[in-house]
Image 1 (cartoon, rainbow, N blue to C red):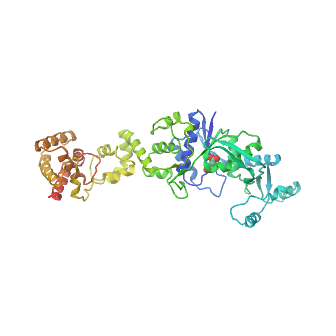
Image 2 (cartoon, rainbow, N blue to C red; image 1 turned 120 degrees about the vertical axis):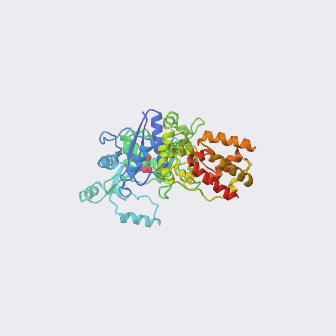
Image 3 (cartoon, protein in one colour; image 1 turned 90 degrees about the horizontal axis):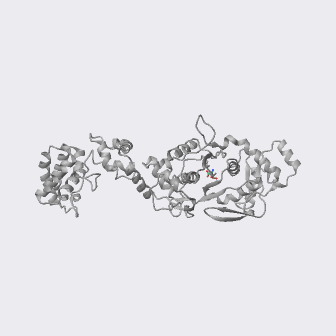
Length: 477
Ligand code: GLU
């Protein structure tokens, strides 16, 4: 059975690339009837950010990415948390020491720093294996005296080759790999070690993660080999980019899931969008529910080239989701935004109906309805519309006709008003647009409005309609 895991380190908020990794892991497992596991990799105490685990948890929950198992937390499955399993890892490291695949290292920070200085660089250099040559007695003496130590992996000579489902076959000369630390001086395992141990213990079949881990993978494989364990299938994902040259990154404060939700994007739309960020379905379709994604997801559609996060496309997709929302649900979701922008006593449910198919995100609402409370100052040019064949002159004539006509209307409904105004246009021997466009303009004061002339009349009510039309006449006279 396929088993995947999402293994985030709680070091800040959840950016889009991370969420995409989680989504693909979830889809790979679910599309094959497998299990998806959540594992918090928090053994790097220095990078730990308070509250970050909650953000991960909440984001996955809102996204519909639910894990299948974990320790019992009062009737629910919690995630596996590495810091809670700290002591298990040391036992595994000791097994490696016995096998001659790892060793104690007692080098001080000063000694390690001096290696860097000798090499003339702050960043490079591999550990020089000084402690590999310590005698058994020296090691025992040091341990007995409580000399601080780390445990290092002993990288063997030769080359390491592995297959990645996205990147193909990769070979690395082991001389490029350092004897990496497995257990740190504080007793915690490094991320690199705990990750391998847990992937094995949790029977993970498919390891899915960012391509930045491609270069560490040979080291992991040498660990699997040292233990005699099966190597999982690897699926490394190309980065999600902000543009051609820059990665989306938490450090630069690029969009996180939370930010997008706060900006009025729907979780389902975000998930749908990021599913397509580096994966193409086998059919020509863009809008997918999570269930549809589960049915159709196939790793063959994963791309090797970096994907660019396109907010315009996401906004379009979000608009498609908003359009498809049940009208009552949309009203409920839009109400806080509408109440924020509209204080006059208009029918907000009606207004919600007008805007539903016209917004990309909920944050577009404010700008779309700003004319309701206050008619904006606008230029007479707005009355001129080529296709409608409206001019400043004929618009004035139409408004002057419309005011007394509308004053007389007793049935103030969209259907009745529309029918009667069309009849009036006929009587005036003008096109419908030549009366409707000037009314729409006078009522909204904007080049676009969320609904047509007669709908605006109904929304604003008779008094306000007449007042705004008279203002229009004033402007055009
Ligand atoms: N803890 C690692 C991270 O947050 C996970 C890498 C992996 O999935 O193996 O990037």
